[in-house]
Length: 584
Ligand SMILES: *[C@@H]1O[C@H](CO)[C@@H](O)[C@H](O)[C@H]1NC(C)=O
Ligand SMILES: *[C@@H]1O[C@H](CO)[C@@H](O)[C@H](O)[C@H]1NC(C)=O
Ligand SMILES: *[C@@H]1O[C@H](CO)[C@@H](O)[C@H](O)[C@H]1NC(C)=O
Ligand SMILES: *[C@@H]1O[C@H](CO)[C@@H](O)[C@H](O)[C@H]1NC(C)=O
Image 1 (cartoon, rainbow, N blue to C red):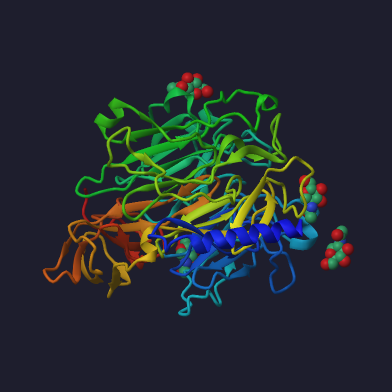
Image 2 (cartoon, rainbow, N blue to C red):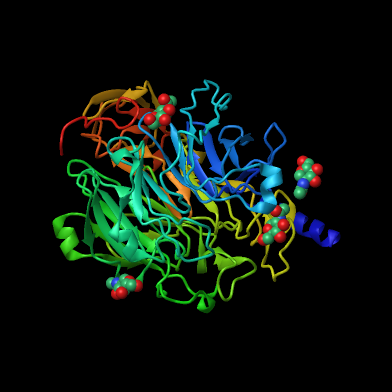
């Protein structure tokens, strides 16, 4: 075995040195170990990502010797530090408020066998606050998770709930399940609530959530540019008016496609552009299985759907209905990430099966899904129907990112990938099932491993421009108001075409369970100075087009995107904040 390994290592080395210096290309790069399974991830500063797992038996420990289930990943040093939490953040969601504080919402009851090593409390009504983290060194020193079980609690117990930041900078919390159940939503929380609380903290009942059980966990919810909220659960959609508490049904997803957990497809609000900021929703993957199928009849080998459906949320677009297109392959548990140039990266997931752990008739090991897909797909919204998907030039990774994995755009402009664990806790030995072995050529060493264990390896997916000179931004204001003109300095390397410039204002979103909530891209109008050294940019017209809170400004010149510059959009005041700017 050892001999074989050395032979293969040598072959690897020879192969690598024989290859010519490669042209800039997309590449996966391993960055180190996350210490916990990164099953939720959110960028919280230009250098830091918060990750959460369940309170279980992760190897990372807090300074007091307890097992950690929260961590801070440093994008500059690739180091991880433990965060001390009080409650179990398992299968929570989250977002950042108008004042820059990140809130982790909901969670689970910690497993009894793990209590001794974690000390975690019931997290189902959890509200965990972090930051804004102002450590000038960017290392997050002194930045902690704040929990107060007396004053900071949801009104209902919620596991698998969704969260989105609204036009007033507060969070809307949508649906979930009261108790742990293994697969379908059999104990639904058919209501909405808010943080900070509205209506004196009384949840609002929802017919939409009641209609969409049992496949309505982690509803896909989006704040629209007029302040209403689009929701997609199971195969049904509505627009919810927060201010009048009314639900307006929209057309079902066609052809039986269902996209919320446990039939996880995903959905995105496509980039918004001036002057009209017309909203379009893209829903991809998931399953076309009937939501009445008994769990015993489901198999990890059932094919996921390759369907994407796209709806324009104008009267004409709604009348036209969903437009259907097809990904190169079916995907269960994909995630969609808006890229600063307006493309959408469809990444992670597998060809077959469902979400959740060991809860269907024919699982694969403990996994309800199988056949991980290592190659992402780029979707170009502005291309002609039929030619929007491409895998050309995109690399393939053999690190599976299936259930309990995450991906997020970083301020550096690449994607950060973490997690994967279709098991109830962190398994250090194979669960005794047939394993699929991957062989991998990496710094002359071969690793053999089975994909359906826990995954601690962190990766980035780097765009080709990361190997070239990129535009740089300087003198970016730390705060911008709505409908405001401001000027930044830009350095554009020779060779980039200034005839194609895009200026994107982005919320990088929160990654959990095949959904990237609050992810948003608003393109901004701009004028490039005659000497091509500064951009005068017009911010979004009002707080409904971009819900007030932190953002990153990315400038794409030709094929190359700058590092994102952190800005606070709006006043940075605590929510709820009043309407600002000019109406559309
Ligand atoms: C709990 O942990 C302590 C050490 O931290 C150990 O001595 C004790 O045996 C553990 N109890 C159980 C029930 O695992
Ligand atoms: C959506 O699902 C429901 C219930 O599962 C079904 O009755 C309905 O026909 C589906 N809609 C479409 C357009 O397939
Ligand atoms: C992991 O979960 C299994 C049950 O799924 C349990 O038997 C085992 O004790 C757990 N291990 C740890 C370390 O918590
Ligand atoms: C942000 O607002 C929330 C909600 O009002 C509040 O709990 C939190 O303390 C605020 N953060 C800061 C840093 O003031």
